[in-house]
Each structure stands twice: as C-alpha cells, then as structure tokens.
Image (cartoon, rainbow, N blue to C red; front, side, top):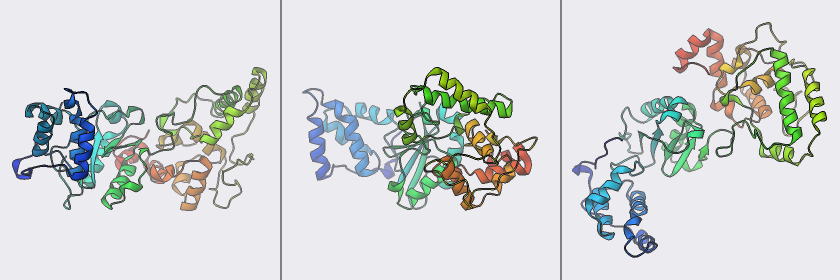
Length: 373
C-alpha cells in the first residue's frame, strides 16, 4: 500500500466546523448507531467533511475524532487507509483517480495515465494552474469487468479509451462534468456482456447466432478467435423481441443454420431492411467493393471484432483505405447501421485505418504508441 501522509502545515487550516446543514446531517448519522458504537460513523462523517471542504484536513480529522470520542491516531488510521479520502488539496472541479490494478493495466490504463499527465500535470496530486484539476493512480476501484476505468468524485467512468477520457476531462475543466454520463462509456448496460446476451436465449435466437457463425466461417474459411473489443452491440428492444419469440423446434433451427451457409456476404448482396437502421440505398452509404483476394484484417482496428467485420464485409468494406476515406456523413451512416451510438468517432476508426493503410502495425505503433488489437 502506498504511504499516505497529511498535507504540509502550510496547507492546513487552523480549525474545522461542519456547516449548519451538515451539522444536522452529522447528528442524525451518529444517532443511527447503537449506544457505544458511534465510532462506526467515522467514514460517512469524513466523506461529508471532504465534500464540504474538498479534502480531509487535519483539523477535520481531529474534530470528527472528538465528536466520536476517538483517539486521534484511530481517526488518522482510517483517513490514511482509504484512498477515497484526499489528504491534500485536489482539483476543485475534478480529481481523477485512475485504476492501475492488473485488469485495468492490461486493458489500457497506461494510456489513461498518459492523458492525465498531458492534460493535467506530469505528477500525481499536482493541480493545474487554476487549481481545478488533479489526478492520481490508485488500486482496484471495483469495476474490473469494464476496465479500464477512473473515479471522479463518487462516480465511475468505465470502458474508457484515452480519447474518451480526454473528452471527460475537458468537460470537467469547462464546468460541464455533470453532462457526462457515468458508468460504461460504450454501448453496454452496466456490466452486461458487451456483445449482448450470450445465454438464456430462445431456441430461435440461438439458431440465428449459430447461423451467423456458420455463414462467416464458410465465407472466410478460417477460425477467428473471439474479440471482446468488437462484438456487435444489441439494443434492449432487440433482446426483448428475441425473448418474446416462440421457441423454434430443433429441426427448424438446423434448417435456418443450413440456409445461412448459402447466404452471400458480398457488398453487392441485397439485404432485408431493418427497423431503425438507415436505408442501404441511402446516398451516404459508403461505396463497397468486390471482395479482394486478400482483404485487410479489419479486426486490427480497435472496436472491430469478428461479427462487426462480417457486417462490414456484407457492406462491401474490406480494406483499411476504404474506412480511412469515410467522410462525416458516411461515418454517421455506418454508425447508425451498426447501432454504435458514436463509437466510431470515440474509437477514431478513421485515424486507426489511416495508420494501418499507410504502414501496417509499425505505423500504428508509431501513431498510437501500442500494437493494434
């Protein structure tokens, strides 16, 4: 555990007192605990003091210890143990706590730290010139499934990319942090599977899933490992519809899977219109090409997995150069067709594709400082 000490005396106020409103809240909170157990209220009281002052001062720790009849050292032990308590002045608008534990580090926490260093300060706990922003690296914040993530105040911001974190920091710097949605920053519900439900589906839904896998394997004639980053997103409406559909007999499911083997994946193939998706005849649909002998591995683009790559192939998108040439209207069309809700822009597909088209993995590493997925 990192060593945590109180701020230097030059930062410490001479005294501390709860505001009138907070004093009423504190009294009610202490009275929630049985007689002789009032010291259990120390954590909520310290959190309320931090919310009032922006950080936990030495005077606040001693005041709370006196209120709870605790030795100062016992209260100090609590304050220095939990990283949720700030023992130094921090950013008045945002103090970004970047999780650096193994799951987050494996999923890109180092990139988030680089953004904090470039956007806020080279050193943890150093505030910006106007005192509004600061950052630190902390241990596990309890959202490993949605790594990498950060905590700002009481809220978590999960499934982050460096670009998305920079957008969040900019919003807080402008005083608009309240406009940023908390939790996952991609199209998933809390910690549900990123690609939608994978179990407890109706027989028909399972048959459709199997059919799609068979069609893709037939078209590419290779076995592709799953990719968490690029699974297709499913909406609640689609999930609910599949659960309402009567179960299909096993024989019918097999028939559906067999039929899927013969479905062409060419960009020129006709497709059934889907409610909520833009029309395939829309003028903003990117131009497709015939499948080349050696299509690019689109899964090297962060955010593109096997299923999304298959959909792009159906649209006639096979090369990095095609994606790199997309204009805003074309990106918006593809985003709507994939039901990505802005992810193409957040993950910067065009810039990734430009690097891969220009010089492959070597150019990608040069631009982004890491290997493509």
